[in-house]
Image (cartoon, rainbow, N blue to C red; front, side, top):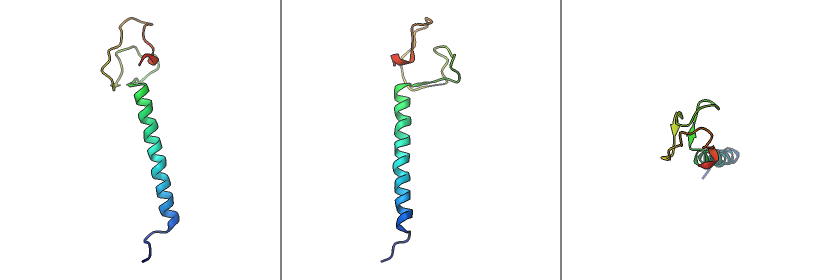
Length: 69
């Protein structure tokens, strides 16, 4: 029985599938380490547009860094 697609095409699709999996995993790792997304670098705590954590940030300026997550 003959294959429908050539081997090089099947291999390239498998290779792309693996690379997309690595890309999705790295994005997941970034969101896990920094679960708040801001529009600008100088945004204040509590002004994030998307948050993946339930932790509340302290209101005092200079008390919080992103590495405290």
